[in-house]
Image (cartoon, rainbow, N blue to C red; front, top):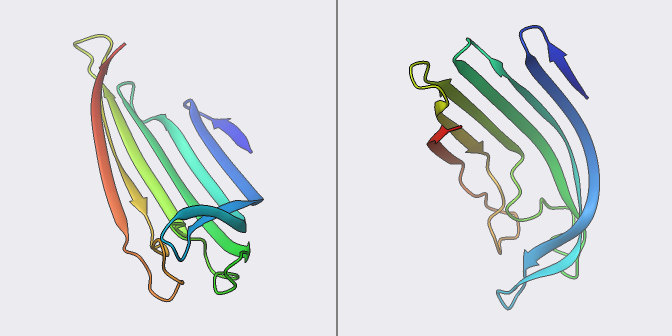
Amino acid sequence: MRTRLAGNTLVSLALFNLKQASAETNADNVYVIDGNARYRGVEFSVQGDVTKDVSLTASAVYLDAEQIDSSDPTLVGKTPENTPHVTASLFAGYRVPVLAGLSVNGGIYYVGRMRPTGATGVRRGRISWAWGSDARWN
């Protein structure tokens, strides 16, 4: 579902329930497609201009994922490896008014805890943060 609010702000909401082939690291430490996983969740995003020169984009995802079948029965019912329950991002853009076409942008990503590669789901991976920036000329 997507709607445009006053001030040219775009708001999106998506609910999903997907089943797809999954990949995992097997006993030989080889990453292979083996089994299926179910992914249910919700994604929310909002983007728009705060002022005529500043724009913001924010998004968040909550994900409930489960391995539903695998040749390794210890993985069934667990979260697929490298799948976070929560991700989020926030980005800002600044259009430099004195140099038409130039914008400076930056943002931050958050990736919540996930089951690390090759683990059986007993211990959890760490939380990750990343940032990025750029400048562009249109």
